[in-house]
Length: 332
Image (cartoon, rainbow, N blue to C red; front, side):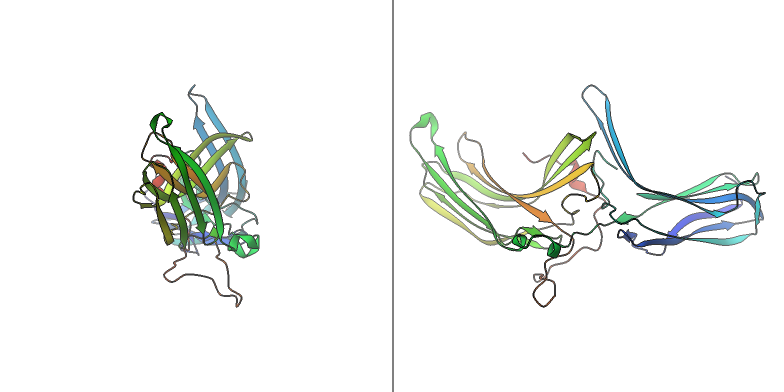
């Protein structure tokens, strides 16, 4: 690249790079030159897309793609016209465009990957230059616009028969689990109340409550991969035969997470669940109670219109882009 170009960068007016559908994406492209320079043009390109790539066991690449934004703008120069002479120093080229309504939230996963690109097409005195900047889109889910039943306690009961080896004796394990509501936002805590009564002759090794995220990837309208991961967990010790254990509003923290589903995107489906797991102290499989929950962006409001937040709740102002748990072992 020619030494005449000192700087070529895209800058957004919104420094936290977080935008909502329907908002204006504005900023400027800065070009700093050391000497007089001829430029054929300066182009601004905004791309928003969803892409799913996956290699199958036969090494065939499964691929699908959706386009949400594809906007091009010429900031300098006209087609067929001679080059424009730019003087030494800093040149600023502003841009502004409205983001379409209904854009899905930004999401980054193992099998799926919005960006803005500015590129210069200078004359013979300067080689082609390009800069890319990524911005984040959050399509909010307001829990107050969802069915009101989600704000009420959510309960699940089960009676499960445990038997000792060789079927010599058996008995029921009774379990009742209740969540304080059926929908949450990142930063809140999920309050879990449970009663586990062990009427069997088998010791229960442990009980556990786990928040999981399930991601389904689609290509050609078919699920090509599904991943379930554990995000947070609480665990209690053993319950001996004919004993009972109670959970009293045990709190499970909700980390920064994308909302349930990605509205406007047909390639990815996101689901969150609370699993209450009973692990017997024998060869039987774990007993799992599944309680699906919704993950939103704006929490429930009280009757006076204020947010119904608990003490210490912190609501994130952005979506997580780095998601280290994507590399961890999946939940089974």
